[in-house]
Structure formats: C-alpha cells, structure tokens
Amino acid sequence: MESAYLNNLAISVEKQGPHHPAKASFPLRYGKYSEIRTSEYEFLFNLNCEIKFIRGLNASWRPHPAEQLKRTDGNDWVYYSVGDDSSDRGIISWLGEYYLPCLPYPSNSIWEINYSSNPVIMNAFAAWAQTYGNLYGSTGDRLHTKVKEFIMRIIENHDGVLYERSQKLNEIIGGNASVLPPDTRHIDYEIIPLMISDGCLYHCNFCCVKSAQKFQTRSRNDILKQIAKLKQYYSRNLVNYNGLFLGNHDALQAGENLISFSASEAYSAFGFGKSERTTPLLFMFGSVNSLLKSDIKLFERLNQLPYETYINIGLESIDSKTLAHLGKPLHQTNVEAAFKRMLDINSTYKNLEITANFVIGNGLPAAHYESLLELLQSAAISSRDKGVIYLSPLKDSPKKRELLPLIRGMQGQSRLPVYVYLIQRL
Ligand code: SF4
Image 1 (cartoon, rainbow, N blue to C red):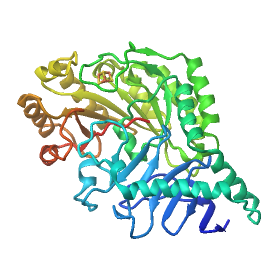
Image 2: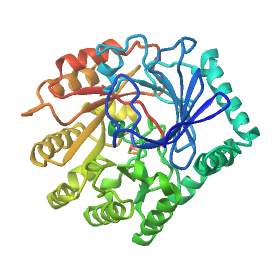
Image 3: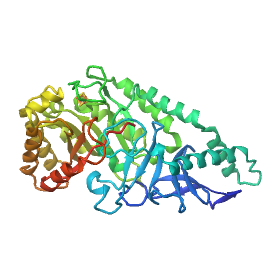
Image 4: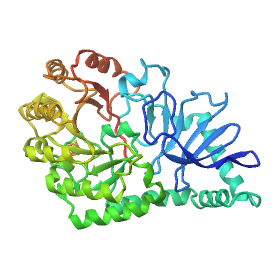
C-alpha cells in the first residue's frame, strides 16, 4: 500500500525492512512496521500501533542524522547516541555496536549523556505530542479504511495505555527483567522474556540488579501460562521477535530439562521456526556454580536446540581479594575453572557461546587488573569468534569516559574480544 497523506503527515501503514537487526552505522528499519513522516521527523510504530522510534530528519536534528529515540517494551525512552565519533574507531570499538544507549534511569554508564536536558530531544518529544494531537483531531474521512484503523489504534495507545502495557508485561512474567544479558545487543535488546527461575545463588554486595529471593525454579505449568499470555500480549507484533530471554538471573541453574522444555515450547508458540526468519537466538544468564556443575549433557542438548544460544556468566574477578571486596562468595580457583570451562564449551559446540563479565571501576585492587590481563593474554583459544569478555563498570564509577583507556588497553592485549557491558533492563 502506498503512503496516504493527512495534512502535513505522510502515513505508511505497512513497511517491510530486513527480517532481523543488523549492525550498521545508520539505523536500519527491520521487520514489519508502520511509519508517519512530517518534514522534520520520522515516527515509527510496531504492528500493534505503539510508538517505537522517533528520529529527526532535517538540519535542526543537530545531534547526528543516525541518532534516534527508541521506546522499549518496558516503556523506557532510550536515546541512541553515536557519540562524537561515528566511525569504526568510535563507539563500535568499545561497545561492539554503533550506538551508545543513553538510559533514562541510573545504570553503570561509562559516558553519561543526559538527553533530557537537550532541547533538540525535547523538541522531538513535543513534535510527537503535536502529531498525536493532530491525529486525534483529524476526521480522516477521505482516507482508506486501513489508514483510518491505523490512526484509531495509535490514538488508543496513548501514554497511559503504553505504561499500563509495560506493567502488564511484568505481571505476565511475574516480576521484572531488571537486567538483560549483554549478548542481547546482537538483536538490539528485542527479546521476549520468559521467566523459568527467580533469585540467584550469591546475593553479591556490589550487585545493583539482584532480588532478595533465594534461587528457585518456576513450575512447568507457570512457564506454559506465561507463554500463552505472552503470545496474546505481543499479538500481531510477535512476528518481529526472533530472540528469547530465559530469566531471570541464573536460568542455567534451572537445569537441562526445564531449559529445553521452556525453549522448545516457546519456539513453537512464538513461531520462531517460520521460514523467513533467521535462526532465533536464545539468551540466559548463568553463574560460576551453574556453569561448573552442569553436566555435559546439558550443553549437548542446548547445542541441538533450534537456536543459537548465548549464556552470560558473571565471573567478576580472577583475584580472591577483589571477590571478597565485591562480596561475591567465590575463590579465584572457582573463577579460573569456570573460565576454562567457558573456553572448552565454546570450542566444542557450534551453536553455543558462553560469554563472561568482569567488573572495572574505582577502588578495585591493582591485583584485579593484573590477574585479569594475564588471564586474557594467556587464554588458550583457537579462534576469536566466540567468548566475548564484557567489562562491566561498577555503578559508582566515573562517567566521563575516564575508563576508556583501561578498556582500550585490555582490548589491545586480550586474545578474546573485549567490550563494555552497560546494564539495561527490559
Ligand atoms: S551479580 Fe549475579 S549472582 Fe551476584 S547478586 Fe547479582 S544477580 Fe546475583
């Protein structure tokens, strides 16, 4: 269907981009979506007619033509900045992506950009409010029925409804996904969350995303109910998802049977096997304990699932004193063993990648950095394709790029790929 015009608005109800997100220095539009354009802005909507992206189109959009605002399923507006260098030497080199997500809530950012004080960004929000008002006041009598329906659904999805939808999502999964695995960056954090367990094993002092709960798994019945409700929740827009996050903080500890059951049920219910989509991605967190105690059969089974699977493990440090300082009840020998197992699994299983997090930031002993560097320099690997090491700044670390030289130093000497991990919620 061609664009329809309503006053100064060009409306496209059905657009089709590539089937899955790709890493590009300019925002690619992927999947099926709808669009409204004015001479100054582009507003994009998902298939449920909920606002998803806002981007400026003319010279007054001074940040950079590739920058944009994205509304997440948790109803946060995240500003995608390209920083001051959009080339391959810029943000991509330290994040593995071409943009820096600037979050509207406290996180562990390495370079804090307060977009809410930028008048250009505020003008973009005002333009969206004005466009919404124009749609609300329009009669659209001469428009095609499809366009009229599209406008009506946008009007229904006002700010209050979008907020309630995000709360509904938490209600369905019985909690909130307070942090997503760093590997979800590969699909722009666009995952369907499915909780198969709650709590974690360690309750580390330094952690800002933990819950007070002890680790426990969900029942199969609970998981099936979540899947049925999630299918209804995502509705028409389900076709745009190709990633599943098994939550919460240590899904690997849930064991072979529950993980396989959940991943397989979700695969059929969410239509991940549909022909035009690429292999879906499965994400979860694991811990040192769950990685070490898991039987090899679990990894063999995961490798056979119709997914590419990423398991992210919080190793934090290879130095016992630092682990004690962080309040993580582990010894360096446990972390060494987990690191070795990560390398073994990555070299054995084609469809599995284990990645690991280490902390960085102020106040950590020198031995932490020395031992980490030694570990990364001597890692026994045959290929650099897998086993990304994420450096996660502690929450109170400086936020004006002071940590970048340290990160660059690690990247230059590590045998494994090294990127920064910025904590993002759903
Ligand atoms: S770092 Fe992981 S194990 Fe430690 S408290 Fe946070 S979620 Fe739990």
